[in-house]
Image 1 (cartoon, one colour):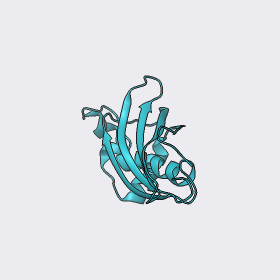
Image 2 (spheres, helix red, strand yellow):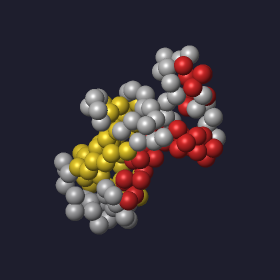
Image 3 (cartoon, one colour):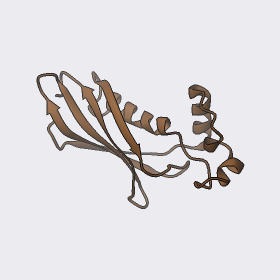
Length: 134
């Protein structure tokens, strides 16, 4: 059983090929994500990773690692504070912020940090249900 304050961390990164694959899967071919020439003309100066691809890390962790097997991922609210770029290492941190033992649900803070600089890139809250862990 998890308690408030329990946490889990992972490192991740995406390469441009993975971002291009996500373009195909999602249908989001915004050139901001894959076209270096286009992105160079924007405030970001280079292609950025889709927010939904970053959120897929949350889904993987919630379903497979923390809380893990048997979990139902009920909701996610995310604020993308800074752009994420390919080939950089990021750290995702998950912290249980509240638990409803009657409904077997928990709110879990979901954050992404730039591994090298320690800056908060994404801040959010998820809700998960797991009868064995909450």
